[in-house]
Image 1 (cartoon, helix red, strand yellow):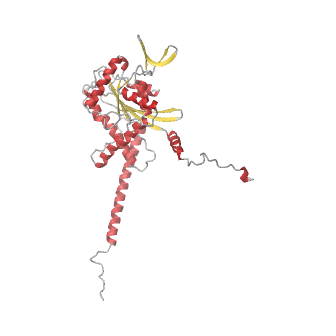
Image 2 (cartoon, one colour):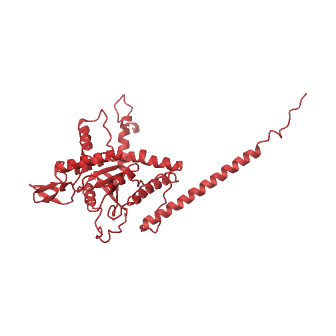
Image 3 (cartoon, rainbow, N blue to C red):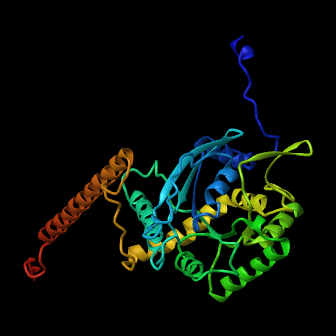
Length: 372
């Protein structure tokens, strides 16, 4: 009776199939359960709408109370790096988004070294990840490396400024740079296309390597191939952004109202905002892979070869929060423990080698064989 009432094991696959075709589903379920991490850096002069565009991209408010310095404070303005983290969930998929802003960039009278603090921050995240990888607890490593950098270009010039060129030349080997023309609604369509061609020409002339969108495989869907082609043609992305919702002919749109009409942010005929968001979302995994396999590996190989100088972690007196200070103290303590463990292992190896040399009889002291 027990055998009759017991439930029979159900084979989820058809006869003749092993079932490893379901491996992608397992990876999908595990990834969704774990969640995703992504770090985005935004760089550009003040007044180009960086904060507004980030809030528009992710439909959140990362900068609720921002202090804007006046003209007198900008005379000796220094570049600060502010990281804001927000947890976003959409259809059961969780994303831990960290946006690193750079207020003060390009605002001072002398901007010669304004990008050095940004380079230091990027290298510091590489060094932190390298220390975590080499540490004892590698299970829960938080990835704060910069996966993408939106560089905002002013629409009021005739191309790239010397600061724009120098910044991208200094950082193109450390981070994925995506050039963005800000406030494109201040230009006509012809002016936007002219500025795009000029920017791309100067990028090529100066040997700057921006993030290249990956080529499509031959078996990809035709619609996806067309989407990637349009995204490649849109670089640099000319965007206009706002969080304001307007009522246009009975429908709700996000846009800017002008005397001559409405600029719809999410209309690809008006600006490249929707293309920039599509590029970021559909290639988020590729941005992380390029960071891991190219930029981080370059830093790691130079670091292990002794060419790169290890970056010092920020001191607790640099205006960090209590939580960040405690984390840094724990990291410093863990690093000291690792150094002590390495010394102990070296002493044990040295002792074992000494014992083995003493136990091995010397050839000169070995007894000679007796002859008959």
